[in-house]
Amino acid sequence: MVPIIASVLLLLGYLSWHFRTQHHDVVRDIFGNSQSFDAFIASKQVTAQRLHLANNAPRTADPLSHYEKGTQTSVAIAHVQEIRRLLQQPRSYDWSTEYAKACMPIYGVLINFRSDSNAVSVALCFDCNMLAVYDTSGTNTTRLNTEWDFDPIRKQLVAAVKPIFPNDVEIQKLR
Image (cartoon, rainbow, N blue to C red; front, side, top):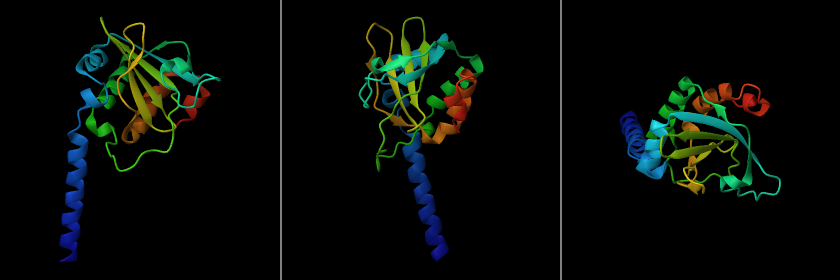
């Protein structure tokens, strides 16, 4: 009897997790709207750059103007495809509202996706495993989401980012 109850509880837990992770709206919750998601998907130019929090910037560094940006580097198509694949899947994010991380993200990498008419940038913090998405189409940078936890895909994102910054000691130390 106990093994049956345990099996049922495990099944219910799995179904609850599966439902939570499969039924979130990545377009709305991660990218803010369909125009930004479309720019992300249809981008013809993808670059990445290192971010370093400016010395005089507040620890709650937002928007991106609080960061010193490194040189933009073109991202190879294989890495672009992997990053797109990872960021558009609902199971890539921890959708749990049961806890909040006790850290403030300090973004270290910015990936810029530019299509013909729109631009979206994804800021990644590998300390907290959180990301923020920005509309960078115009002269003003607009935040499109709150930070989202990418714990489930940390290893894959690290693997996709390392080749973009082969000479960056901090990035190469990421695991």
